[in-house]
Length: 218
Image (cartoon, helix red, strand yellow):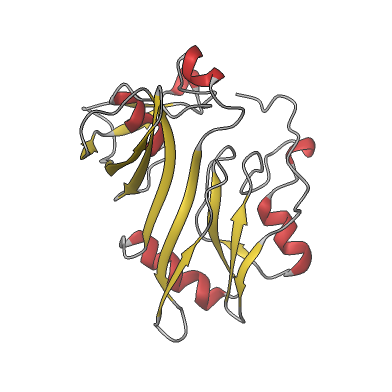
C-alpha cells in the first residue's frame, strides 16, 4: 500500500527525551515513518532526522508511522546488540495508551490471538490460528467517554500492528485508524489515537533500569 500524500510533521522536528554516549531516546510524532521508505519522497523519517545529528545512530525497534511515542536508538554497535537482545528476550517493558471505539464494559483482560500479514491487503495484518505468530496483549480501562474508552495496552509480544488488530478483534478498534477502524471510528479522530507512553529497559553499559514516560497527545 503506497503512502499517499506523505506529509510528516516538521515542528517539532526532533524531540529528544534522553541522550548519553550509548543511546538516544526520542518521542516520535504521529505521521512520521520510523525508518525511510523505498521511494525518494518517503526518505524523511525519525532515523534520518536523528542520523543528521548523531550519524552513528541505529534503529533498535520501530513504531508504526501513525503511532506516536517513545523510541530508543543505539549510538554504537555494543549498545545496539545489548538493547536488541533485551527486545528479543522480552525484557523491555512498554505501555501504550489508546482511545478505542465504543464503551468497553469489562475493566481489563488480555487478547491472545496469533497474527500474520494479510498479504493481498498489506501492510494489514490479520488473525490466523494456523499460520500466525503468537501475539499477546494485556489491556485495562482508564476512563470512559460518550462513545469511546481510554485504555492502557501492554504488548507482551511485539508483532506488527498487534495492538490495532487485537483491539479490533474485541470490537473496539482504535479511533482514527485508517487501516482497521470502522467509518464511524475513523471519523472520530484526525490521527490514530495510539501512543507509546512508557518504556523501561536496562542501560547497555551500567545495566541500570531506565524508565521513561511521555505525555499522551490526545
